[in-house]
Length: 299
Image (cartoon, rainbow, N blue to C red; front, side, top):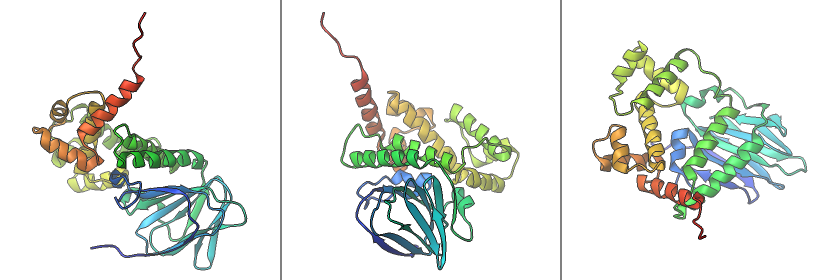
């Protein structure tokens, strides 16, 4: 069943964005597995006001210049350069440009995913953040690479750009701090999965290794990574497979190394997860290697 929410946009043209759905000019479906619905950059100098009712996502606004204002009813919260403004999911909330200066900012719409539950509060809120300029560069690069990929460029770096952006966003939100407790135990177990990906890492086995129930395992996986245990193991295997393909290994050998008996089945799952085929990853890696290889000279 589709989720219904309402949006009001009073904005000037400009800016660039990337979305997880194909109807966006620059689209990248693998954004969904990172918990991102859309992201973009803009620097409006004119009208800029956006309001949403019952939106099923969190809105993040990293301000680089000028002044933004979050609002909910008659309440407002100023967001200055070097700050992050957050509009938690739900409610009737928005943000606008205020003052005379342009408003360069980076924005994210984060899916209603357990990994982002710490962003949920009863009202909009702000905090200091110096990560805006880095995220501006990362989103801009990601948008361009997504456009190149969608245009059929074999050397597009869409997925590496997405990985970098995701890691920078997690760092900006304080999610890449030292792990402890169950998070540390789960992280260590995933390292074992990476060392022996072809083994049967069932929910029963993982629960047994951690000495917890399957229900508890599901909870900590959702809290730490926003994914169910099976999805987490699958995502780790796919990351290893992508690394192997970039190193020049064959599709068949990579498939076998992570536990697939049939290369065709592996290829289908790989495309579903990353939005590109294994052969496309191989060609892109080969193209980069060719450009970086030293040219022969005649003496």
